Structures are given as C-alpha cells and as structure tokens.
Length: 391
Image 1: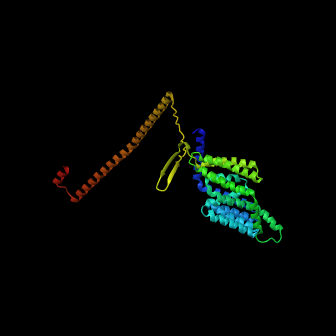
Image 2: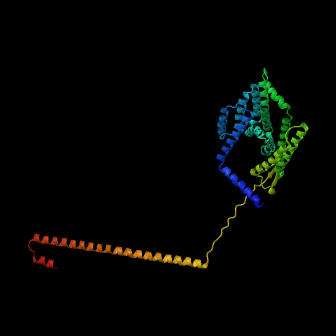
Image 3: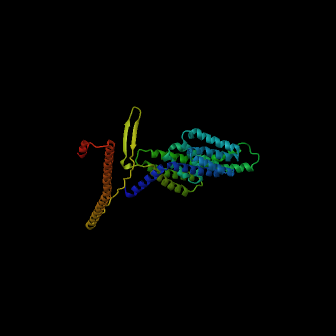
C-alpha cells in the first residue's frame, strides 16, 4: 500500500479505537439526536395539532430513547402520528394503525432494525434524500428491507395526501365515515410516481444485495456502482413512460452522493485486503460450502528511530576531570568529618576514666573506715594483731 492508503487506514483505526473507547457515551448521544430529529420531522409531516405540549413530549421521549433500543422509535413515532391524525379523522387514524400493525406482524417483530428502517425512510423522503436509501440498505442489511422501505414510503405519501383529505373534509359538509381514508387510498393508487419508486427501490435493493454477496473480490464495488446506475435508469424510465415530474438532476446528484457515502461506509466497515483473498470449498453429507476468506488490512507500526548524540573528546575529558574533582572533594569532606568525630569522642573517654578512679578511692575509704571501727571495738591490739596488721 502507498503512503496515502496507510494514512487513511491509520485514521480509520484511530477513529474506530476512539469510538469503541467512548461507545458508552457516543451511542446514547447519537440515539437521542436521531430520535429527536425523526420525531420532529414526523410531526412536521403530520402537523394537524400544533400544541406545544407535543414539543415537550418529543424532547422527553428523545431523552428516554437515548437509553433504550432504537427500535423503540417505531412505537413512539406511531403514537405521535396517530395523535395528529386523530385531529383530522378517526377513519384515517384507524387505517394508519392497521398499516402499522401489518408491518409489525410481517417484519418488525422479527428484527428491530426493520422498525428503524420503516421510520427513517419517511424522514429521508422529507429531507429529499430518498435516493440514498436502496443501495445503502441493500449492501448493509440485505433484501429483507424491501418491505420496511415500502412501509416507510407509504407513510410518507400518506402524510402528503392527508393534507388533501383534511381540506376535503373541512370544505365538504355531510361527508360520511371513511370518506377521508377512501380519498387517501384513491390518491395513492392513482399516483404513478409512488408506483415507480416502490418498484425501483425494491429492484435496486435486491440487485445491490445479490451483487454484494457475489464470490468475487470486488463484489462490494460492483454492488455500489451498478446499484446506483440501475436506480438512475429505472427512475428515468419511469419518468418518460408515465411522464412524471421529478427532475433528472436530482436523480444523478443522488446517485453520485450515494456512491460517495457507500464507499465511505464500506471503508469503515472493513473491505479487507482483496489481493490476498483465499477461497476454499468443502462438503458434507447435505451441503457444499464455498468459503471466501479476506484478510484484514493492518497498518504497520511506526518505526521509531533513536538518535545518539555523542560528545567530542575534549568535552568528554572535561567531564571526567569535573567528576574526579567532585570525588576528591567528597573524600576530603568525609575525612574531616571522621576527625571531628574522634575529637568529640576523647573527652568522653577521659570522663569515664576519672569516674572509675573516683569509685575506687571511695571503696578504699570505706574499707579503711571499716577497719578503724573494728579496732575501736576490740579495745587493745595484741602483738599478733600488730604483726598481722604490719603484714
């Protein structure tokens, strides 16, 4: 790999390490932000009750959402939309809840990520970024997202046509029960653009998923490029066949932006070193297994160079002379301290000897006193005593 790729993979590893290290903080923040934006956009899409209480409820729910799975957004979004639709018509609310219940029975209860896709899809439609949906979801999740994407698309168009049904219900007197829902369903069935988007997105998701699972080292690149080309061709074909009103430049701009986002996303997911790919085939009694092993790309450790700075001979001699001078001064200081210690010890020895002599003199004096007392008690001294005393 060249230096540029090494730097890119080094940046990737640094960001990945930082994310894993602070994941307990980053994930709740991201989930809270995604929940807040999604609920605000859904409220704007179905804005039929502009009470400020809903804003505070959205903020509180977003804070709670930061600490629960993101699939919980499917239920909070459903409640928010249902409350807004209740202000328009009861039958429209019932129809929306039936659509949500069908989605829950088909795929939401099976995997939580499908619930997130169903809510994020109308949000991206509202942001006019719907052309990023099919290829990204096809290469990351698979063709199982076809139904969640379809449900999200229907929710978005239901929000568009509910405005028309609401104005119809307000202007028409004596409208029967179910007229609002019939109006929405009739407009959605006649909308050719909705039909083209549903078919195009479904086909592109399937194509991207199948190409990404190919037994080829560049399958991911094929799925990204061919998927966006197929999306552009399908949308342009539908435009000219049904004479639709969406612009061509948005289709191409969405394709280019989608390719860039997919490449960045796949880079961080880990492409691997496809030049060293290994293939293996083995079988058992029931299956034949085709294994494709792609080694990870590892950035080599940075080479640390240690530079030794050697001094000149003159500087080395000066250092040696300085160290010798310090040693001599230390020895002289130690000798002087020893002499001082001896001087301090001499007076102590003299005092000890004087104390011993004084004790001996006291002992002799006591003995002499004892002898004199004995003589006085005896009275006279015999010659033998005198001889013994002289001895």
